[in-house]
Image 1: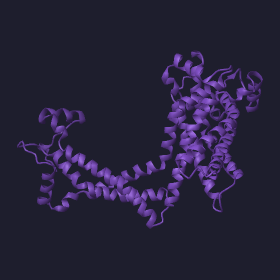
Image 2: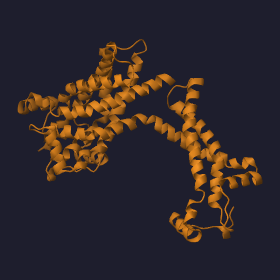
Image 3: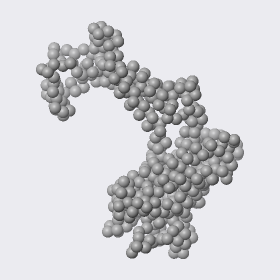
Image 4: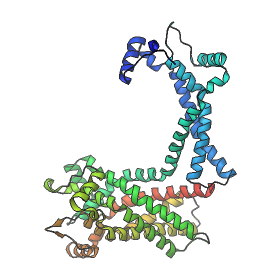
Length: 427
């Protein structure tokens, strides 16, 4: 323990920095940096390498399947090894950074390490092991389990960053009551709202991925594995699984979908009519406060209908396209096959889902005028669109929608194939 007269009594981190620089020089702020960097290198190498190795050993030797249990055991083992490997550097770093410079000479990292071993014994380099492990163990568990459980979500959200501008263009075209083109919509946005407006509603797009997409893919994978125990399911079964998974995911994700439609459409309205939601949470809160909780599920039926069509088309056509390409003899089970199958699936899905999508978009963006909504339902929307704008208006925004859905389908299925492969390898 430090006696009262030896204490530095820093008031805050700012006071500590100022006094260290004034009393001991600016270079003192980097005292022990070699030991600190050495410790960081050891911690990261040990943590990352031992976690992967521990995961393989536990899975193969103890038949622990890929999942939360395996991630927990591997993380705890990694924490033990990391704490053991890093402690000599950690105690050396601490001693160097806390030592006062009384004679103008300070030993380096190895000097301090040897001095500890000589005067206090070799095991003193691991002094405080259990407190260190109690700190680093849970930290390692939280870090790796979070990374494992949310790895899929990371990829989906990264895909959203790419497709968000395309989603915005598609929504603007679908909401337009007149004939328009992708180029004219982009030109109008850039001219009147600026480049950053292309990412209007990004927070809602990310929220949609966190709710709708993760739900539907998780349910579909579980159902597919359940019915595949006696052999691969046929096309009709795949379509049914896709529709059920999409329907459940759509219901969960409808509030985020409503917020997304409104936020991406806001820029096309006159200033006095804009809702000006700050972010997805502000949108959800204001919709609930101003229009009622159930408004968050406005358009839920066409949203679920669209999801059923999208998933039946996307998941089933992907599997069917993949099998058809394999049967040609020109493809093997690899990333090229996954890419080609995904692009075909995206094209089929776009054509099949766009009429339902335009109905969903218009219902979720509609306003209630004098207590009466603009549309009574999806059929009413489709009827009015065909009557007022023509049959092909049901596919308005086809190219930005396919440009959005195609790459998104590719990213989704390539990642899903890799995850499935890893699961089968370790399960």
